[in-house]
Image: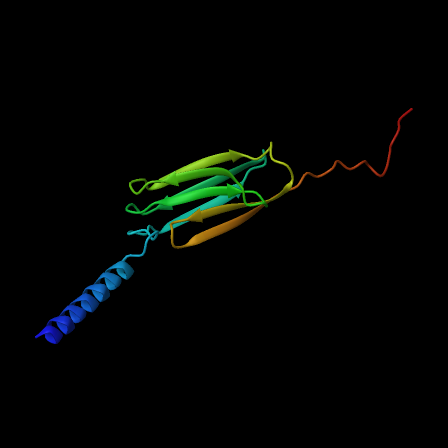
Length: 132
């Protein structure tokens, strides 16, 4: 009788351990429950501003970040699950020359757009015309 109870207790504890493990794998930590698909348009203006237009489905969150080449975040915006449109214009005139990244993510998919800022030095004319 003792061996029957011990084997039954062992089988019960293994089945409980297996079911707990399978439940924890079904929904991993850190993954969003609902993923929103999105479409983004990024373009620059002559006056040195970066325009970001984002349309997304409701039900999931999307994050927009502007990072420099070191990876530090210069701008961040979190769009909640009930928002569907986002438009912004970022002023890049105060940033030093370099390569920046606009990163848009919904938690599963990440889209990265590179933005290069370079200042052109004025050219001196190669020919001079004088009038007397």
